[in-house]
Figure 1 (tube, rainbow, N blue to C red):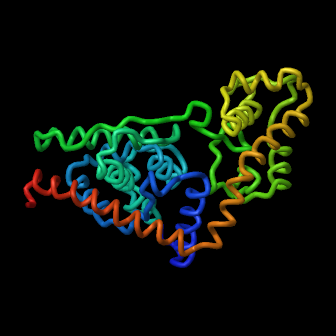
Figure 2: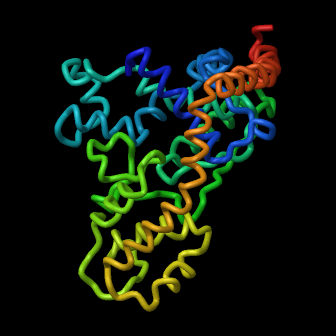
Figure 3: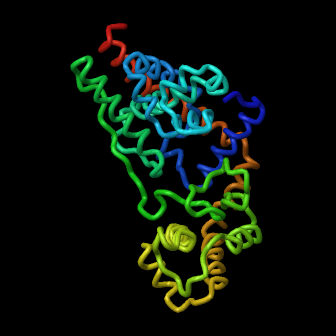
Length: 299
């Protein structure tokens, strides 16, 4: 969707700061702005010329937008035929999975860290790699596999534990932000939806709220769910349970938040990291694009 340019520039900077504060080491990882490497768009267009429209029409995020536009579940063809329903929907949203596939395959990635809700997009990237290789009868792209941390493959909303935690949720109480103060984190987790059952146990169907807090606790403590449940074996009070979860989150975020403050005050360093990263990424990207151009006949 169109963005306010100033807000977009600030959002990109803030994201870079967050990634660096969380521990991404620019000496070991290449961190850059996608828009600085035009090969992403170039490869996406080549993939566009191969990708069946039906693949994109089946993508869950697109289908949910289409269903929302219609107000009820309807066939993809019916909705596309009704121009009044699709006027507010943009081609970029429909075609975005192709660009995601290009983002991954441009660097011949073999493993991709994703959340559970991104598995369908990664599967499309795998299908795209297979289709390209088959079309031109050459093994150009590997089929990437997912890396999914088991305890945090899908962090759920604090207010609605059957829905994913998201920064786009209109309620700030639904999530923990990296910049939240200790007091605000305590307040959010204290108000998190749980249940009235005694004790602490992990059951995502019967106790989604408690299970979500256990998942968050296990992630910030870097322990298994089983160990997390054991830590609360003697806890009967929901209040005590939430306090301990909040304390664990606050403790884990403290060094990240200190680094956030430091990096925000050193904008020059952050921009140098991004610029140098873009140069390194472009070198690899255009080397691979030359191979693609030769394979498809454009060189």
